[in-house]
Amino acid sequence: MAYVIGVVVLVVGILVSIALHEVGHLVPAKKFGVRVSQYFVGFGPTLWSRTRGETEYGVKAIPLGGYVRLIGMYPTPEAVGNPPVRGFFSRMAADAREASAEEIHPGEDHRAFYRLSTPKKLVVMLGGPVMNLLIAVVLLAVTLVGIGTPASSTTLSSVSQCVLPVGSQATECGPDDPAAPGAAAGIEPGDTVVAYDGVAVESWEQLSGMIRGTGAQEVPVVVERDGERLDLRVTPVVAERPVLDDAGAPVVGDDGEVVTTQVGFLGISPGTELQRQPVSEVVTLTGEAVWQTGKAILTLPTNLVGIAQSAFGGAERSTDSVLGPVGIVRLAGDVASSDVEGVGVAERVAAMLQLLASLNIALFVFNLVPLVPLDGGHVAAALWEGLKRQVARLRRLPRPRPADAARLQPLALGVFVLLGGMGLLLVYADIVAPISLG
Image (cartoon, rainbow, N blue to C red):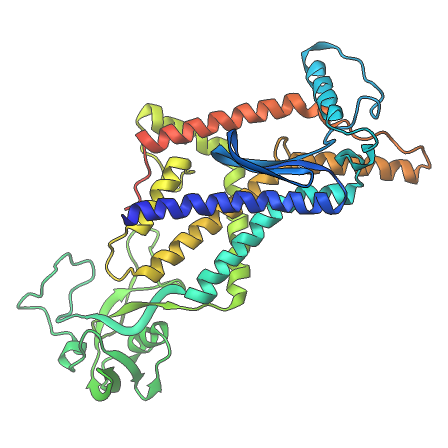
């Protein structure tokens, strides 16, 4: 049941994100006087619709996107000088112009999208992607600031009974293994370390650093157990343990072996708790996610080659491979139904919100790619038109005609076919060569 709930939450979250993306286009377009004839979530057959004012709002059967129909997206044939029709691609552009012109009601040419100034066109076309970015920021804020992220706590999850050598695969203590100082001093799992060597303990990182630097000298330790504070004394042993980097991960040398050093050791392990983060962390994480998503899109062709080799050639699929719809749904189900010890409802909710935030960041970045029919393609066309107008103004030339965006129709068709093929490949790969999430 939890798996199904996770899938439902993901689908609803995606639909809401799509709907708000289109609102990002709808609101400024109406504000600038453009007539918007349709606002739909989904594609294909219409499941429900209702007309309010001059706009039909509705939901379609295939929840793989959405659209708002802005009247006069392309300049009329007259506005671009009635260019001659020669060849298949020229005919495609002409058909697009004529279809766009037919939607303009008599006397409402001034309400056509192509009549907007460049800044207003940019606001309308960037409204959708920016809405996805805002959704991601809100979801990350709820996750990081409201719920928190898993982090090591000063409440202990386990206490070793002996000191095992580095790299030992043993799970039980042997007769020759020395007793661990923590257990010998009376420290138990579930204890919260309050103070160490007279210093108040605020975090596991602080406590771990103090233990490692103590050496083999006796120090006082204060722990809280069942609401009471106990004063204990412990003498760490000096043991060979891995050198840790700033992230707490073992450092690996040039020879591929873990680098070790002699440090103080108690034999205690931290538990995990949700720690709320500052608002600044939301900005940092959002920026990092946008950067990483941008790099992933730039390397997408190479990634798709690897995915195709996994799907059709039997090669192992990389764990950082791009996920398709099936993989994302599976991931949401696995997150919701996770039975890992210590992962509660709050952790699952946070993980789902982060997944939805990641998808919205992906929508934000992907829609900025300067290719039609993506929003970035229309942004590029608007910038080109604005550049031509500025050059004409500086050179004191007549105002140039509107940019003939309809000429991009063949490119839009090609991009649409490529995106469709990519989607089919990802769906197939997610089924026959899924990424191992365990």
